[in-house]
Amino acid sequence: MTNYKRLYRSRDDRMIGGVCSGLGEYLFQPQKM
Image 1 (tube, rainbow, N blue to C red):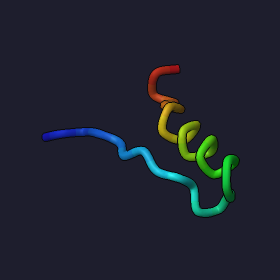
Image 2 (image 1 turned 180 degrees about the vertical axis):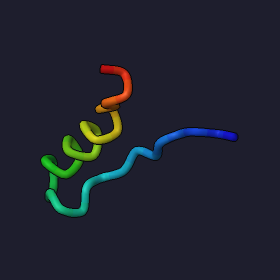
Image 3 (image 1 turned 120 degrees about the vertical axis):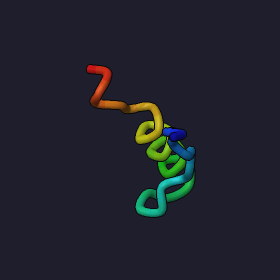
Image 4 (image 1 turned 90 degrees about the vertical axis):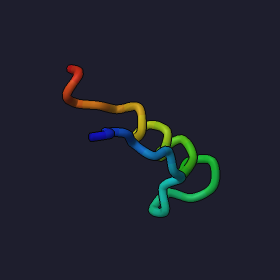
């Protein structure tokens, strides 16, 4: 079973903020904390 996340641009935030928001959601993994 493969478990992976897909990197995407957030649709709620726009332009550069959307890219940063999508990257933050991709990198933030509460399980590792």
